[in-house]
Every structure is written in C-alpha cells, then in structure tokens.
Amino acid sequence: MKLLRVGPAGAERPALLDPDGATLRDLSQLVDDIDGALLANASALDRIRAAAGAGVLPPLDPAGLRIGPPLARVGKVVCIGLNYHDHAAETGAEPPAEPVVFLKAADTVVGPEDTVLVPRGSRKTDWEAELAVVIGRTARYLGDDDDPLAHVAGYAVSHDVSEREFQIEHGGTWDKGKNCETFNPLGPWLVTADEVPDPQALGLRLWVNGELKQDGSTADQIFPVAEVVRYLSRFMTLHPGDVINTGTPAGVAMGRPEPKPYLRPGDVVELEVEGLGRQRQQLKGA
Image 1 (cartoon, rainbow, N blue to C red):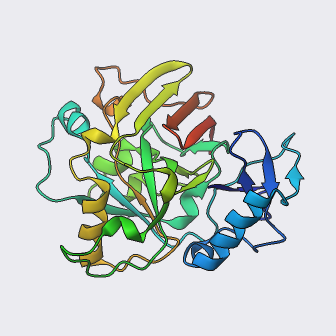
Image 2 (image 1 turned 120 degrees about the vertical axis):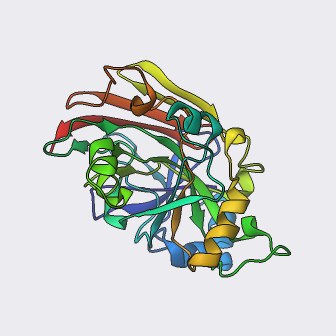
C-alpha cells in the first residue's frame, strides 16, 4: 500500500493512493491517522487492505490538496552518514568500519513539497536524496538469528538537507548542520514493506533547477538496510514510528569542485526514489 497524509499542516487526514497511481482514497473513517500506533497494528492495516480491495473507500479530490509528511508523530529520526561507497569517495573520506550515526529532531520533518528554508547566515546548504526506513515493530538488541526487515513497516523518500559549514566548521557534532527547520522533507508516500521486495535495489535521483546532480542506487550502500536496523538496535530501541535516513549517494554540492554549487533561496530541488514517489521543494530564506 501507498499511505499518505493530505491537508493543511497540522490538520492532515490519512489517505491511500490507488494502484492506478492517480486516485486518492480517504481513510479517515477507518483510522485516525498514519502513525507508529497504526503501523504496529496488523489488524488495522488489514482493514485498510480489505476496504481498498472492496472498493469502498471514498475518493478525494487532489486539486489544490497539500501532501504532508506520510507519518504523524514521528518518534526519532536516526541518520546514517557516509553510507555509500561513491559518496565517501567524493568527500575524501575512508569508508567507515561501522555506521556513522547521528540524530535529527522530529520537528525537522515537513511535507515533500513544502518550502525548505535556507538558514540565516548559511553559505553551504546542501542536498541529500535518501531512502527512509520507517519502523513498524519494536527492534531491541536484534541478534544474528533475527530478521531486521521484519521490523520495517515501509519506506519513503527523504531529503536530508544539510548545512555543511554548520555541520563541519563549528566544532562538536554534526547536529548543528542537520537540525535547521524544514531540513527533512519526507514522502510523498509511506510504501509498505510488502511492495519493496529488495531495499538494496532502488535508484535515487536528485535535480537542482532541472540539472541532474545525484543518480545512484541503494546497491552501493556500505551498510545495507538490514544491517543498519540490526546495528542501531544495539545502541537504542527502535519504536514504531521511528525513521531511519540511510545515507546519500555521490553528487552532493560538498563533493563538487570549487565554486561548490550550494543551494540558495529561489533554487528548486526535485528528488525521487524508485517506486517511492517524487518530491519538489523551492528554497526560501529563513
């Protein structure tokens, strides 16, 4: 299923995208919202599938309808840095021996077509197309005999916007360059895991002002999705409604020759992950 949330910010309603890829169906009579509690409730998800199969869900008129983030009440956003061989190479970094882990605040999450704000004083706002993993079943101390993917509810497109000067040149951790407002557009859909048979076979692409900047594949990940979920479960409990950003392929502004083409107000970024939909954001000053 392709689950989404539509409507004004803070007042979104749950919806379903039909298999035809064009028709939206209203889920608000079946469920209150799309959140961790729903994703952990197999019977509620089965009711949605049954209603969709029976053709009884009312349509929604998409005209002028904002698409919000596909997940309400995000728990935590856990991010994996330098997780593509080609991205590590373009930044001059050695591939890490273990996953590089940092956190983004849940309030950075916005809709896939919402405005992204360039922070005040920013000179190095950068783009990063990523595969997001959404947890649907608690993952805690997963062992070699456990199946990490059984804890995944679904997948989405994520834009891990980053301010490189804040991230690298101001000391401390990366968090200063990752947690500016609007720095994590998510969606348009949450695609349930049964529709993504192999998360290591997805293409990722990103354009800035119509020019292709990133064109990679999750096959190039240093630490694949299953390994990332297992690894994180050693250090933190992953709860339904948590999101994992799994890293970005080569092609970011930071990895390009001088003068590096960092983002400015007025720029338009578009990105997609194969089978998971497409985002579009215009940048404005904060």
